Length: 288
Ligand SMILES: O=c1ccn([C@@H]2O[C@H](COP(=O)(O)OP(=O)(O)O[C@H]3O[C@H](CO)[C@@H](O)[C@H](O)[C@H]3O)[C@@H](O)[C@H]2O)c(=O)[nH]1
Ligand SMILES: O=C(O)[C@H](O)COP(=O)(O)O
Image 1 (cartoon, rainbow, N blue to C red):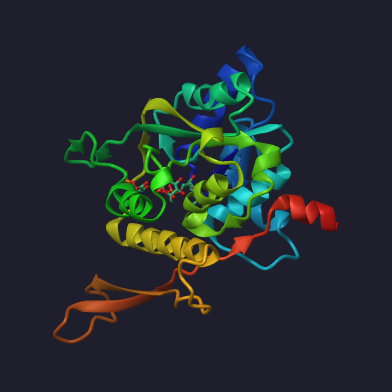
Image 2: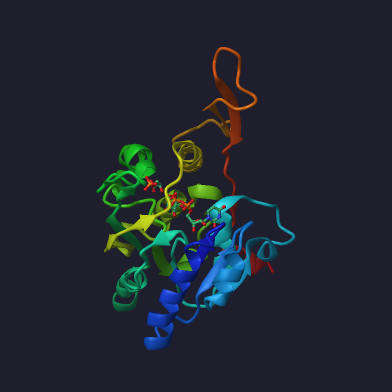
């Protein structure tokens, strides 16, 4: 399953590669789902033409409170998926190879004690000027890894804790709440640690990963969502006793712009980075 928001440049090639190698040549993958996550571009059409089953985040969550971002797209996609094992692949990957899927599925198909597999890789930081070989994964290196080492040291062995490529047994994934936005991967690791234990979690080396880099400002908002998620888990574990959730307002300062403050040459930009969560799908099925 590929969550996709405005990924018309890359989603088609990923879907075609998976279909060519793992549906047509080798019948390993039963369905390739692209969750269209409120795209404004041709993502849905491109994915459909490449052979994906395209589902719409808003259609799947119709009648429920509107939540934002990737985590909600994944929850909707999981509800739509029919397989016993679900693999998640980001739709902005470049130079995508089928071993990203087979690598994630391998431990789940060969070892019944494994319930979840996380990918890891080298992450170059690529710009038009140059490439820093292992400079990518800036949120991971500057925020998520230090946070995990501090608060959840059992998870410190994950090489890429925020990786967007992972796979799990559906019955286990359906037991997990899904945090909205970019909090979803951190919450999933913490929740899996609590529900199935570290020995049921595996990681595989997928080589090298290339993707579309976001601006530092956007990564600041991503980091804030992940920190907000961490607060929710620390609160649930009783480590943070404060009953009130923190403010979700993140203040950033942007150079120039029509609203620039005189003498400061910056405008103040406030974003709401609070995350929310969808309940475990298994609970919804019981209720309905
Ligand atoms: O509202 C959204 C935002 C993103 N996406 C998709 O989610 C994937 C990953 O999003 P991206 O913005 O490319 O995230 P990264 O900058 O790559 O962030 C990294 O860190 C995030 C936080 O853990 C993870 O969610 C990502 O998978 C991981 O690659 C892409 O296919 C997006 O199109 C959605 O479906 N809906
Ligand atoms: O996983 C991360 O840390 C973020 O996606 C940022 O990745 P980048 O530094 O490779 O853009």
